[in-house]
Amino acid sequence: GQQLNQSPQSMFIQEGEDVSMNCTSSSIFNTWLWYKQDPGEGPVLLIALYKAGELTSNGRLTAQFGITRKDSFLNISASIPSDVGIYFCAGQNGNSGGSNYKLTFGKGTLLTVNP
Amino acid sequence: GAGVSQSPSNKVTEKGKDVELRCDPISGHTALYWYRQSLGQGLEFLIYFQGNSAPDKSGLPSDRFSAERTGGSVSTLTIQRTQQEDSAVYLCASSNYAGEAFFGQGTRLTVV
Figure 1 (cartoon, rainbow over the protein chains, first blue to last red):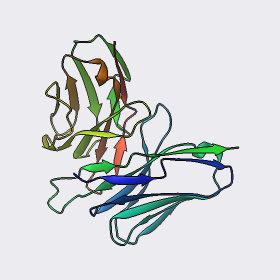
Figure 2: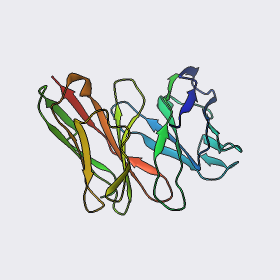
Figure 3: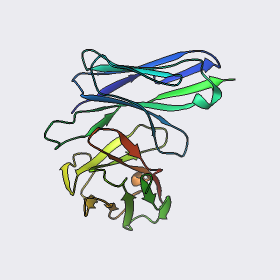
Figure 4: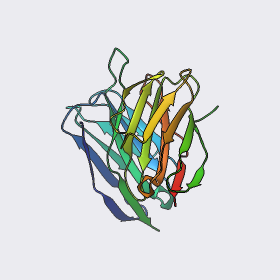
């Protein structure tokens, strides 16, 4: 089946620094999603991308849908302590027939922010 | 409801017993997903529903696992004869045709 390679596995940064993480796939996706998970909670949707080349921002977060549809990155600018958590990318291949919208997840990036 | 609701939030069961985990998706969402997450691990796909049918159940680990969805809404994940390796957080998500999937808080299952 489809696999997503997410990197890095973990990051340890100082407050105020910018961070970048990315996901790559051997096959194309029609939708890319980025989630954040805090301890003991379910993942929370941060950004959704629907078009190849699309660049979308949500506050200090910026994500891009790669032009080849096989990759996506997430940037966090001016990190703060509450950015700590696990970030997951997910790809989806919904088709026009509406019969299959399976989500495939990366293994996550653990972000630690040192105050 | 406003979000995806899962119950119970925590479940401790004895090895060999059956358990049922429930998911109430966001109203109107046609797609529903079950994932499993072991401590410190990523999300392991279990099964996906579109309406009441399951186009993809390839992630169910064994025939002890089953899931159903009725009325295009509530879903139940059943684990029979639980084993210690079944201990994990079971996460449910639902999505609309736009593809944005929203997760519940999960059910933490502990098999002792």
